[in-house]
Image (tube, rainbow, N blue to C red):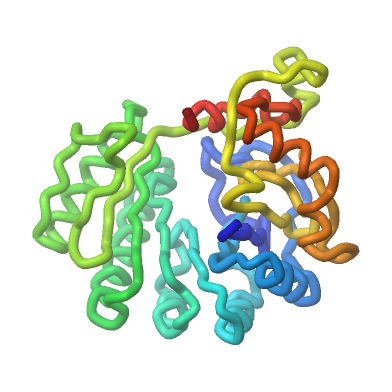
Length: 294
């Protein structure tokens, strides 16, 4: 297992239609430093090399964001930061200055739902960061994500964004070349445009009770508990980076080590099921993302 998702906050400053943050009323809070330290200790214990600072939420809104990044610098762990980019004008210098940050993913598809003037301002700030990073951090991978391919209502925004990429970097990224096996397009250096289609976040078991079969295994597999595991803002360890509501809670990072939690009977059963191409948990049975794995 090489990655641990650490949801340092489930607070977000946007309310995107495709994200549970914009749909579900919930208690929004920040992970405290004691839990965070247990998370990074657990990640090192299981031999992970990479951490993410999200499941839901905008990580740069955490009051201790800069402090948490500094904590990572004291470990071998590297950070892949996924952000909506709305705070990059304030946090960009901190991100560029940290050797712990290996990659930054900007969810620029979120701007399609914002007022045009606001969206253009955020995009310009992101592109300014990219231009600076190319000079100051040529080792930093950056993905400009457009995860809304095929959604007609956002076509004008996507076209505008491609035109801004061309104007800023002198590179044409031609729409229409997207396919399931070709999603990343190099712009320059380690800067990429990453396109994908929207997917439906899995819902709670109660919302899908008519569509799941808790006593019957369904064919399918996933990389959860193989390549990654996730820890929610309150310390619950969940099997999947999409399980934002803790439907598959395996344990609590404040009460057990991550290694102990991953060795639980529930975790073993789910992992064994994936290996045998079986979706054994009701939550997995309702997940459309599983269908992406053949």
